[in-house]
Length: 471
Ligand code: FAD
Ligand code: NAD
Image 1 (cartoon, rainbow, N blue to C red):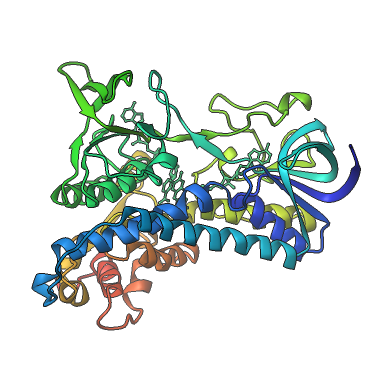
Image 2: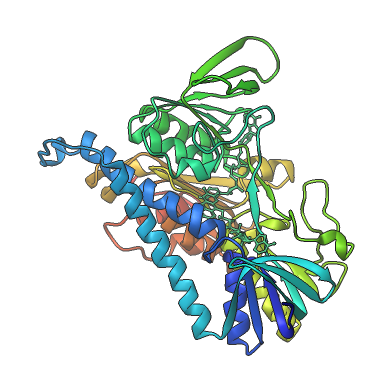
């Protein structure tokens, strides 16, 4: 049966971009519906991304610490055992709690949740293939595309999510692999390498570039974290490309060679993780029915107000430009609703933080040294090691550093790069500083509680503006 009703806004995709936009639209009094096909809200991030990966990162870290780092703290532990099934259950509990929470927020904010797959019938109509069977169609004065992204496959390897996996398989393995090869040393590769190496797998990360961490990570910080991860047991092959993979036997064979050509080598693994990036997802959306095209990387093209060439159809999140991050999608979601309701919205793309949740964590905001050099900007550096921070030393968790980059002339902060315990929380202060156009002196003259890790942040600012006290 086909029924057509009209909403102020129809959102396709209930990931972070779509669900936040839906709630915000409800708050603004719009009649809004959100179509999601996966059976639960929250998209990649809540179901198979940010949240489940952080559950496993947190609990695998605890396990690893209990195994290797308790005796000197005066804690004697006997009989430590991994219960992987329970660890996965704990992960599922967090995911279910949070995705159900969004359903509650939908009700609270009068958002209609439509379970099904949406496709454009025309410029104002979305045809929905309902999950429970049947079809419906829904008209929107405005339509928002928030269909997200998917893992980029590796040519020649068939993803079965058991032996050859993406991050989706990597958060759901039933046993700890003996040997795991990770193709791609970006954020997904390193977070998942951490989880499985802590749980006992022998992990080798193969990275095409000369440094790990993916786009944006400062080279000095990247070297620093690589050293620590190597100490934890992860092996790295940098400047190395995967030439081909063979998954026809029980073990997967991965042929690699130096990126610039040269020596070949074959790596054996019982599990191979493909983590070479993600690509926009628009399959089955019917873009061709309304004449919308994607660029050479699959992104739907938009203007600064998130509009496609059809002005009432807008796009946000992973499926369009910018870093593929949940909090970036969230900022855009609020801004796009403000554009629709008030003709004004704002996202500062220069102040979106990045965090890698390894141990220690890596976090940064603004520009790195290579980017500043390329832009011809003169800058000064101030850094401070956690080994000189009283709290980090007391916690016996003092690998890493804080690094400030500030304009050589004006002292305005241009970038902040942290590798260290709790870097992901600490970077929030850096984002605020950048957002408000602070100088390193502003931060250096701000009181930070003692004894906290945040004092390392202040001292790095002091080192940029003048001199640190404790180093
Ligand atoms: P998505 O979350 O992908 O949501 C899109 C939704 O649209 C999906 O649920 C999909 O089912 C639905 N959909 C698609 N097409 C249709 C259709 N035609 N009809 C109906 N529904 C449709 N980011 C961070 O900031 N921090 C992290 O710690 C982090 N960790 C991550 C870990 C992993 C393993 C991965 C893979 C990603 C991680 N990310 C992280 C990235 C983050 O998940 C994404 O940036 C974020 O989910 C993007 O949100 P989105 O709404 O644009 O897309
Ligand atoms: P990425 O772009 O961060 O890293 C991919 C890495 O793979 C790069 O370093 C690249 O040089 C390398 N690579 C590409 N092709 C290769 C090849 N053939 N052989 C060897 N190496 C190769 O992508 P990702 O790690 O897959 O993550 C995808 C997206 O998800 C990113 O945008 C990331 O920001 C997001 N994400 C974020 C978080 C977080 O915020 N903590 C966590 C997970 C994922």
